[in-house]
Image (tube, rainbow, N blue to C red):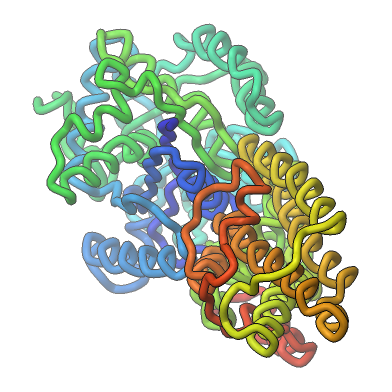
Length: 574
């Protein structure tokens, strides 16, 4: 049994997430967590809400609520929606937790001890209209690199180039839209990332199995222009982790908080402590996942995120870990980073800030989670941006889920009930047709397993669909409804194998469509052991084993429904 630590990029607290956010980190992370559990591994799957910084303050201000109250309410909303999409987090935590506050302050002290933090006087943009300093991400303008007119002051989300607010063309406040901006002096702490450039490059060069998207973005930030820059890690804000050096005050930093991008990744670790605290476990139970001296040296740590988050997870957060470890600590570094491109919507981008696209609550108000999970994962933006359209969504739901999988389960179980009762029929023996199916599926299940191990999600989805098709084609070739008239025993053998195929499909499909998979397994009254031996798996339900006829697993989406949804969700959330 292996031990696998999985984290999904933590979503911002400021509003309900859209389907692009979902497929860019949380959903594929859940797919992998479910798969590894299905293989019998010990898995710890963590996520949380990212609650600090200006996004939370502005959202709370718009809602007319204190920021702490707003964050608590939105955490519950996001938790409910993650449950609705069947995301199987072991813990869905909060970056505003006491555990994260303490751990962030601890890391800051260790980085200072390592000589990786220094105080600098700098100039920062102040908005006279808003009466406040503006964090980089709340200054918008045109990117000098690609011309995107909604680039932020820290990074252009279109071309991913790292920016400084003064680089922007025609900068404006993202809060009020005001261009009445001026530059004022303030003091902040900087993380000296440039000192760790060689260490980071040497480490990244050893990650030979990382996706090209991940390594290319990391190396671009390492080497573009003047190379990796030092990063300010404090802000002039009210809401956030107070700047302290461990438990001690930090002279000159009174009233300041740590930058959200410093404390947010640390929440991955803190979330594990939130998990143990909530379950009455001791520190050793979370440290065995995060501290190599406590057992984390045999943990495989896998992160999932959209490409805009890659620089912070390949560079800044590793600097935090490496810096602390240079003082004698032993924190676990990530082993594999699965990054994703963007899922676009109707010719444009999904955008929470602009209210563009289908959002998680809207999606669940239309159809159950399995429809969305299947479509999003089979079209996951792994090797390039992908596009959501209502036509392809309808086609995937109808052809894959209803016509291939759902139809097979319905035909087999209902035919068996009508001819043999609700038990696996006895009689007949397997012949060349059954041997061919077993051989084909042995090859296909091995390939599916390989693709899931490699986190090749689109290819794995295609292979899973092909596995479902094997059952349909077998049923068409053998035609048990015709065989029953002349040779009931032959029909019994066909249906016996087909009922075992339903069990196999339930096990293999669980990471993608857990509700339907559970319905199949429940109907077959069986367990869910991974099919390491396909021939044995297809004999798991013996003659005489009782089963239930399930409700239709998937309803077809009509053209009228599709047209109605396309009209109702035309890309703007009001």
